[in-house]
Length: 281
Image (cartoon, rainbow, N blue to C red):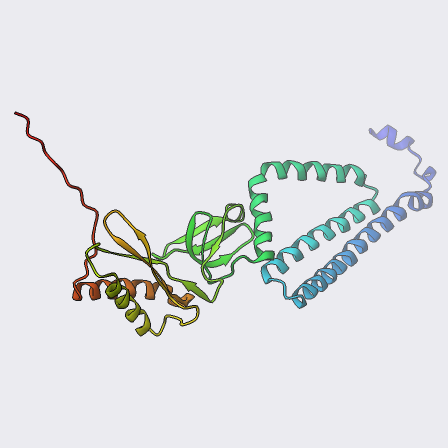
């Protein structure tokens, strides 16, 4: 606008009070109300989230699950607060909600595997097939559970390796928890030769088991001839022990029974193959 046009502009013709009443005051009030909606809404969101966490804590829910659900509640409520504040400013929130829904669908499709791990993590936390410190076989890995997260589970193997397993792989497969029960049965097989004394071998095994204080009297240990194999008579030996004593008893029995068999002249046969060579004239 040049100087001539500015001279022709009659500023006195502008109704400033009407302009203020029509635009400034309504917009100013909308901005103030939008800010108040956001501040008060944020406070109420924190209040509701803390109340939900407190109720879940009193229900003895897992701490990881409490924090996770609390984060979801807070995010959803904050989204509503932001939409309400924008609506007060006159923003078309219908289009915004449709845009958020489309973006959520796109993100969900892109992160399908992660969402599966997320859902599996929630299920593991809710149903608790195992907990920290349990020795389990899950997701193709055997080890001690050290940490259960939303997306993954951290395990420590017997040779002290740290393995991170996706929760979807664990929850979607078979889970074997070796620590869940207080007692376990030690399943062992000992073979003796067909020429050896079965009764004597059985008495030796029974004596070793009776002398071991770690082996439980109830249920009673089983010692029985389980199979007449090709080259041996196999005893099924099945004592019961506390879960924490499983491996120590397993290794000790193997050693003690082998040494005792050797001292008493009882053989432990091994597979043999006879080769006959025919001479042609």
